[in-house]
Image (cartoon, rainbow, N blue to C red):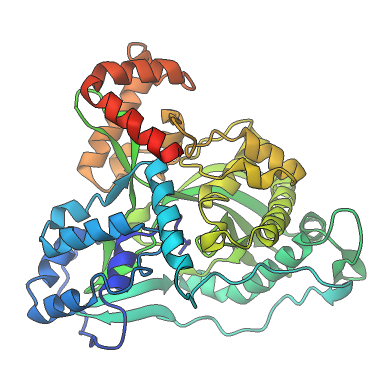
Length: 480
C-alpha cells in the first residue's frame, strides 16, 4: 500500500483509540455474503463499535490523551474528531475532515508546533547520505524470503485490523525490488559534478546513475515501463471483520457544485510513478513518490491495495521516455535529500512544506507532458531555490497552498483514480463530480475556465455574497 499524503480517519481512530496492549483480538466473521460490498463506510463501523460497552470505555480512556497521535491533523481537527465520535455523529466521519488545502496547511503547522514542544521518538528517519567511492555488484537475483500474507497486519481488537495485505505475485519479486530500489536510491545521491562515486558493476560495466543502470538492463533484454498512476489515498488501512473500511481524507476544493449551495469535496488522491522491470535477470516492481515518512525515494512494491482506492494509469512511458522519467526521479531524490539536510527543522520530514505525494510526480508530469493534472500541490518553492532543474519545476507548478489559490477543475478531475465516474465508490461523490465535469465541458459555465482566477472569483462572489467577506478575513489571518 502506498503511503498516503494525509492522515486518514481510520489511521487517526486506530492510533487515538485502539493502539496499545489493552485490547484483545476478536475472531474474524466468517458469514460474509458474496453479494456484500467489499468495503464498509467508517460511520457504520463506528456505530457498530459504539454499541459495545468495552469499546466505549476504551474510547473514553484513549481520546485526547496523546496530542501527537493525530499525525499531521492539527489540534482543532483532533478536537472535532473527538466531539463527533463522543457525540455519535457517525455520519460526519464519512467526510472528515473536509479541509481546504490552505486549512490543511494550517493544521500541519499547528501539529508540527505541538510535536516540537514534546519529545518524539517516531520522527521520520534521517535522509540517506552518499558516501565515499565504492563499487558494488548488482546483487540480483536477490536472496530473500517473501513476506507472509499477514506480515503487515496488526490486530487492534474488536474485530479490527490495521495494515496491508501482501500481494502474492508482488511478494515473489519483493527481494529483487528491494535490492533495485536500494541501488537506484544510492546512485541518485551521486554528485552530478564528480567526486566520490557509488557505482554498480554489471558484467564489467561500471554504472553511476539510475538512468545508466536502467538503460544497461534494457540493452541486456529487460522490458522497462514507467506508469504514472493515481489512487485514492488510504492512510487508514483498516479492516473490520474481514472487510475493508472506507477511510478517505476529504478535502474541500472550494469549487461550487452547479445547482447546489455546496462546494466540491473529494477524497484526496495519491499518485506515484511505478517502475515495472521484467527480464532475464531483474524482475521487480517499484514505486516513486514523496511519502509522509519524509522520504522522496524509490520503494519496492509488495502489498495489495484495498478495492475502494481504485486505480488508474494516466500515462505510460517506455524507451527513451521511461529513461528520462527515471533520470528525473533520481535528480529529485538528490534534491530532496539536500533540502532536508539544509532544513532539519521542518516537521514531518518536510511533508507538506516540500509537498505531498503528488508534488514530485507533478514535476515529472510537467517535464514529460508540459502540464500537470494533479491536485493538491503544496510545496513551498523557497526551499527549492538552490536545486537547479528541480527548483525550476517547483516554481512552475500550479500550487494550491498559495494564498487565494483557485484550483483548475481539470486537475481535480485528472487526479481521480477512475476513467469511468460510475466506478466511484460513493453515490454523492459521483453526482457532484459529474455536475462539475459537465460544467467544465459545457460552454455556458465559463467560471470553470482553466487559470481564470479573476472570473472564478467573480462567479463565487455572485454565489456566496454573504460569506465572501468572512472568507477573505480568514485568508488574511492565514497569510499572517
